[in-house]
Length: 290
Image (cartoon, rainbow, N blue to C red; front, top):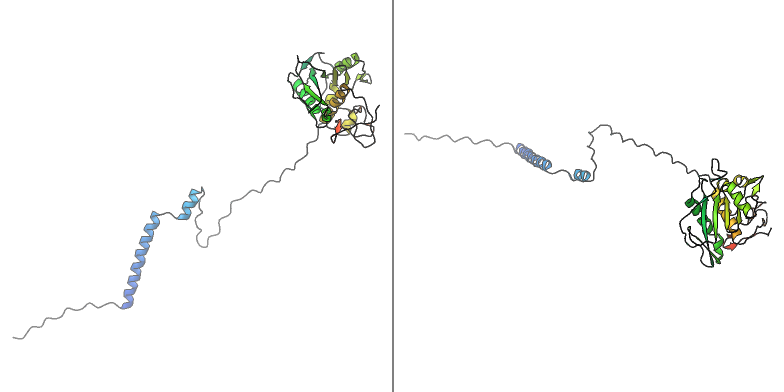
C-alpha cells in the first residue's frame, strides 16, 4: 500500500518589516496619550494653582489666528488740584457789639509759668458777658502772645502765669466792648476815643483793657497792609501788657525798619513795618522814646 503523505500546514505570511514598525509606533503613541490624559485629569497645572492662590484669574490662551483681547480700559489719573494758599484773616466779618452787660466771665484755668527766670507776675483773664467772645479762647490767645518766642519773658528777668478766680493776681487782662472799654479806661484817666468813639485799648492800674472793636477788626491801615488779624492780636496784648510792666510809648526808629512793640501801631506805622514782639532775634528791640 502506498504510504500516505500529510500535507503541511501553510505558514502564515509575515508582514513586511516597515508595516510592523508603523504599528508599534502607533501603539506606543496611543499608550502615551492615554497616560498623559489621565495625568492631566488628576493634576492641575502649577501655573494655574499659583494664580488662584494669589487671588487672580489666568486668561485662557487665544486660538491661533484670533485677534488679541482688548486691554482693560484704565482711566487716566485726574489732574492734581493745585494747592491754593489760604489768604490770612485780616478782620472778622459781621457787626461787633458796641456794649455788653458790664460784667465779666473769667478763664477758670491755671496756666503754666512762662519764662525761665525772674520775678513772677500772676494775671487773670476776663471776657465781658454779652460780647459774644469765649473766655477760654481769649485766654489761649493771651497765653500764645505772652509765651513767645519774642514776648516779654524772653529777657530772662520776668515770669508770667495765668491764674483762675480766687487766686492772688497782679493784674487782669480784660476783653471788653468799646463802650465798656471806654468807661474802664476813662476811670483810670485814659481817653481812648478817636472821633468821639472809644477806639484804642489801654492799661490802667491793675487792668489791661483790650477793645473788642480792635480785637475783631484790627485797624484800617493794618488791614490795607495785609497784616493777619492773629498778628495784630499778638501785638495789642504785648503792647498793653508792656505798659503794665512799666514800659512807655516809643517811635519808629527809621523808615522800613520793624516797629517797636511799644509804638502805637494801632494808630500809625510812620514808615515802619508791623511787629508784635518786644524781643527780635533774641534781643530787646526798642525805638526812640516818645
